[in-house]
Length: 449
Image (cartoon, rainbow, N blue to C red; front, side, top):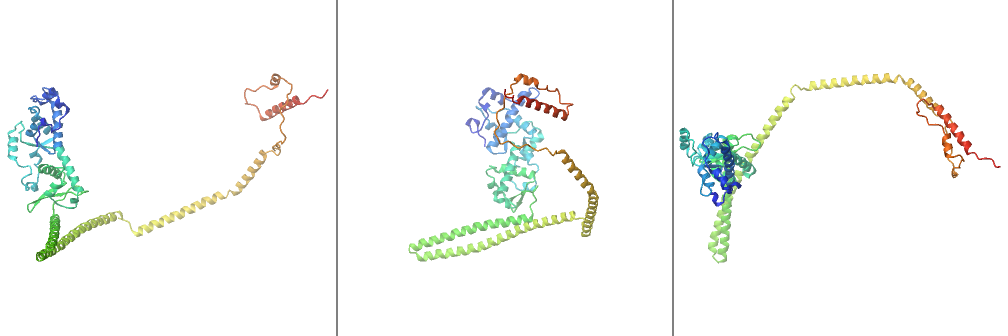
């Protein structure tokens, strides 16, 4: 599905319109990287991500040199160094020969035959034996990054679909389910191969039909296809065929009824009766097939229930084993003995606490004496005459002038001590009394002349 860049159907980087830059990138590589590593690395860094992005945008996970040359053709010229770019990507693990990628397939894959990559092994083998340094134009390379992306998307789509309840899928069912992820059969096969490498998929061939089995959610790896899986798959296929047949018979019976109505309106009673008899026969056949369908569904339900029962039994067994290990060495006698020891220790602790408490109560008399002494100290600290004066009820008159100038009054005041250290309460009381007497004498009124 190569498309010429000149048709502008392929995304190209901004440098694509720079003729000078593209002339350099389209030129051939030097014979040795040591000659000019900047030239070599610049081309590799440009073409490698462009090839991967080109494949991602167009869907396939395989590419060959011929398709790349046609896809990146510009103004009639093709890149001359893409062969070297592919060899560099092989060494870096970004791409891999299709034959090498499919080298670890099992017999299930080989039995699938056509469409599973192994179509040109002789050419690949001869090319490897001859040691040719050139990449053949038609040799396919797998883009590893894209294959892994497809594999992850394919597994997610399967687990999110209604088919996740089926243990086996036919290849055709899987193709229809993943058509938006893998556009062709080759991409789907490569994605399945990647999932097989990761132990998430196994393939088999049963009665000429290609079958795929996925690992279920929560499982680390997929189990091999068993007889039970094949039996369930056959029942599910029979269920699907019976449902389709019953639906077709129902439509046929309805069609016969409609024809009978039409013929009856036209006055063709005998023909209408034949159509009605045919409708009854079809309905009986549909009823018989429907009964068979119900039987198949009942068997599938029983199988599903048995699988659930098996999981429950496994869970029970695991729980019993874990409980047995956790209760190893635990007996009723040992439990009773431990309880008795704990009760004995608790009784001993209660006796010790009671003894300590009784020793502390012997000092009750001393406590009474201390309380009496504390009460006497409180009475001594509070004087008897320490009674607050009565609050006056008359209005307070403004202060009278003493007639002494303010300056003389200030000078009459004692000097302020430099420090309060060394002054007792008695000295302060005497000083306060002296000031009170002096102020009272100054405020006494003079006798009338």
